[in-house]
Image 1 (cartoon, helix red, strand yellow):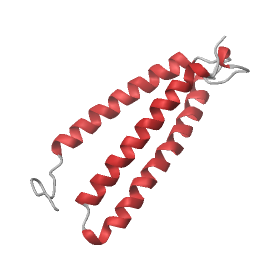
Image 2: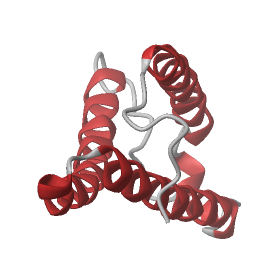
Image 3: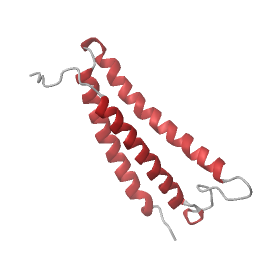
Image 4: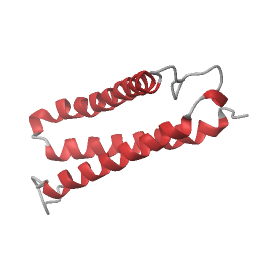
Length: 121
């Protein structure tokens, strides 16, 4: 039987990813925002993290409603972890993450830094 420890590594990696992403966002917003908007930019980094958590719960609801039609059991619905189809959900998350990475690369390549090459002391 599957226990919680099978998905504990997922929480470890996601928590670490949030930590490093938030640090990067704070540095990016602080260095690229005008001086008078730095606190607003910092709050936007926290708001983007909260929005991501909200959208992940919406994604679970959408997946359950889409996969639970026609008399089928939803992927993330059951009395225990043994009844879930977590592998299908994780494959969906891998595909969405790959698309997100491609989208990020396209935007990152097109981005022009405001202070390219300038180091402030």
